[in-house]
Figure 1 (tube, one colour):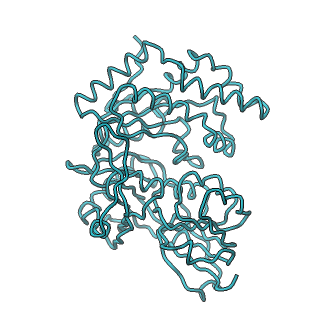
Figure 2 (cartoon, one colour; figure 1 turned 90 degrees about the vertical axis):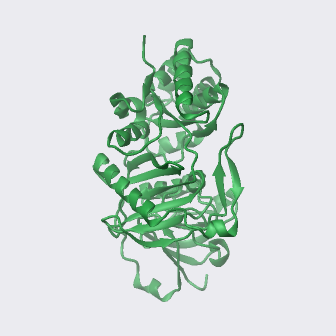
Figure 3 (cartoon, rainbow, N blue to C red; figure 1 turned 180 degrees about the vertical axis):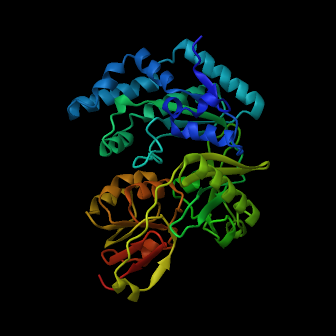
Length: 429
């Protein structure tokens, strides 16, 4: 019988050509001795079999060479078929059994993550462009999430991203990573190397979605190259995200006392520094990671290659202007006209070379990175999805700049230091 499911602790699961870099790196972290959640992988061959069974394989293969109208129609047919067509019985049976076995070992709440074969590569991380589903409790919801992750490869934003990077969606495939939900007390990310040679850990209460989507300013822990904590900064964690039985992930308001409390001890931040060094060795280069901490301790959720560069030296003229600090995106220096955006409906105001000033720096703003010279955001941190995309594009970004949309006047000249995390602006437009 064909094996459609591979357990995450199997050596087979480290095959990125079959399971995508996200799932393969997760398996490799576990085999390197780091704590990871239980789970299993669903390979690219299952996605391809579903395409064929749904009668849209020719549409997928023909998309790249078609004209605009034909390509759009093909993409719509593929996406709709992946959403709606019944999964082949022999595939569904194996997936259902693997889910039941995992639930018996870990409890009822399940996570399904996209792991496309083209993710987490230099120049095309796809951070935040696909789908992840948390806290799935029923088998029906599980299979709905599986279909939605397959279909996400053909979503408009993913197709736009692939178009910019000259990637043919018909030549790749979507694998999946299925794991039990970590009932996180705190979650976050980390950079195994910063521009000054240190390391950085970010943290917030609850699940890490609030950081990934740029909805909070996380706590920040600066570590030196040996992993010792040298500085900490408490973020603005106004809410947290949690999952419970029979509920989708829900935001929860945090008290002022809780907002001011650090999510990690120095020892826990140091522990994460050690894990990042292992991830760096595994990848053969600097690493960006995601993690979650439950009552049993820290678990690693993801590791992807981190590509950084030194910032150009800014014009000394900027030194005469006052500075505000935030969390650095990690690359570059840029300057331009400030365009303050309070709603996505205003994105059309942004012109080439402008500096976007916004409140929430979510991955939906990825489309503007092709034209801006910098980004300043009130919320978010160095390990959010948009920060990852800005590093990919070498766009300077500073996040967690309190009241940026009211302090920085629309139309003034703004300088953004994405390495030091400093923003300056001229006093007159």
